[in-house]
Structures are given as C-alpha cells and as structure tokens.
Image (cartoon, rainbow, N blue to C red; front, top):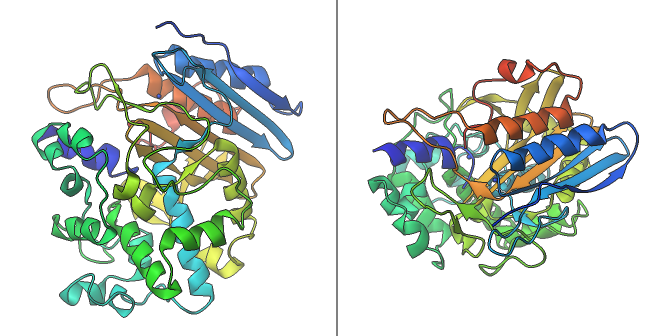
Length: 408
C-alpha cells in the first residue's frame, strides 16, 4: 500500500520523522557578518517555489537575522511574520532526551537498564527486559511506529482519519500498544536502527514514573524554563496561543486544496512531538544545550554519540548532519501542516532554524518514486545560505542522500 510506505518514509521518520501573495520578506537584521541579502533572497525563493509561507532565524555569534515570506493564511492573505509560533514535531524529541539525561545524571535512570526496570508492565515479556533506555533514545529498540495505528485509514491510502481524529484525546499507553502491535523493525540493539515515535512516548512514561509528575510538566520546568524559552511549551488544548500561521496539509495531493490543521489535539504526538516553539527559541535551546547549560559534559557526550538510524547519524534525541562547511547538530520535525528545521554548530556559534506551513506537497510517480520538487530544492538552498554561505553552487548535489526533511 503506497501511503503505508510513505508514512514510514515521511511522517514516521520526522514526526509527526511549506489569493495572491506577496514575496516581500519582513526581516530584522543585526550584524554585518551575515549576508542579509542572500538570506532574504533564498527565503523568498522558498515562497516563489510554491510554499505558502516560511520564516527563519539565523545566528552567527552575536549577530542575528530573522525573516519571513509569504502568507500565514491563504484565505485572508495575512502575511507570515518572524517570531510566529509553530508546532515543531520531532524536534520535541531533543527536549525529551535532555529530560531523561537529567535523570541519568541524578542516578534515577540508567541508560543501559531495561525498560522493565522502570515501567514493568508496559512492554510485556522478554522484550521489556531486553529493550534499554538508550535503545529508546537512539531508535535501536526495534519497536515499530504507532502512526498507522492512531490513524488507521492511512493503511488504505485514505486521509479520512486525519479529520476523524482531529479532536480525539489519546493516552500514551494506547500509542505504545499501537507501536508494540506493529511489525518489529529489528532486534533490540540491532544496527542500523529504525526511527519510531513510539520510542519517545515510552521514554516519556519512564520520565513520569521516576519523577512522579507527568513528563510535559517536568520538561517544561526543567528544560524549557531552565533554557529561558519564553514562547515554547506543550499546548493543553487543540489551539495554539499567540501569533501563528495556519498549517496546511496536502498529503501528496490527496487533500486538494490543502486543508488547515492548525487546530488539532496533539495528544497523538505526546513526548515524541507535541511541543510548540519559535525559531528564535529553538536557536536558544540548542545553543544552551550544546554549551552545557542543561546537562553536564558526560551526559552531553552520551547524547552526541551517534549510530546509523534510517539514513541519519542519530544520537540521543539529536542527529548530526554533515554539510560542505562542517558538522551541525539538531533535528527536524513534521506534523500535519507544519515543517521545521533546527541546526547548530557544535560550538553554538552558527545556527539556523526554519518553519513552513504546507506539508507533503510532493507528488509521487505510479511506482512510488518521488517527483522532484522545487520547494525541496529551495528549502535546502536557504539552509545552505544560512549555515554554509561560502559553499559553491554545486554543494546541493554533494549533500547526503537521506538529508532529513528534504523529501517530506
């Protein structure tokens, strides 16, 4: 079934694993070291390629550039503005991993201890005694994903579940059951690993068990607040507070015209992907994390130790992306109608975060192969202008084939 395969490649790999409109950017610029014109032009190119709206924040040391292009609402023409809040999908996994590692530092969790030590009835039988906390965080548990279980129509090449489940509240234990019922992706600890959102729902349940509070509350107090993030959090309702774009889902042409999913009960994403943030907050978060402001050196070393997972070099809730100008660390996210990138150099001096509001705009051939999308090329072009401004024009061709998010 075509869309069952696409779910694994596009949604599961980056959780759930952009009337007339103006292409003029609104931007706030400080610092002469950033090529503001090139950044503005490459962001406008994303909109010109067909993305409804996009916004990004770039940092180089103390210098900062923020920009926005296109529309936040296709019906009214309301423009996208820098600083808008958006669902960040799987970037939430970094927040969850940091919280677990804080408990590792306090001796309450051991990375190589089995899941059954903390939540003995969650994963039945030998599996619960074989899968470790580390395997959850680096996606080597072999546990399948829960997406098709939560949205069953996807297995029949239908998007009906996306609307039927819009206001459904789903408990994390049910998500875990869906993941455990899905075909195993491998043996526990086997490489390469396979990205699965169920791993991070289980991690959240472990966190709740050892802290005595729900995982979202712990993460908010000990990760989000500690990092000084003013516009980041877990919405408690289907609505997003504050200025935000509408979030349009096409699902590879099955939803035509694309439909707005900005109002949605995100309990299905849980600690795997329910966080809302801004591009500036994401840059601050990764800069604080990589600078040792949230976990100590030993825990950070564990976090940055990577293994091969679904075409990525994946650590614990974070991956490494090797670009023509060096290695960057971060994550991407994809939920219905919203895509996000957040990448940072190891020293935190060069950073890039970006969001966009039209998802699964790509089209597929009859054999399931993807057709080239100018939007994909434009997004990666802006990424390169932000992180590798001196890279040659041919650099796009040298990027890793599995560049996360490039084929969402």
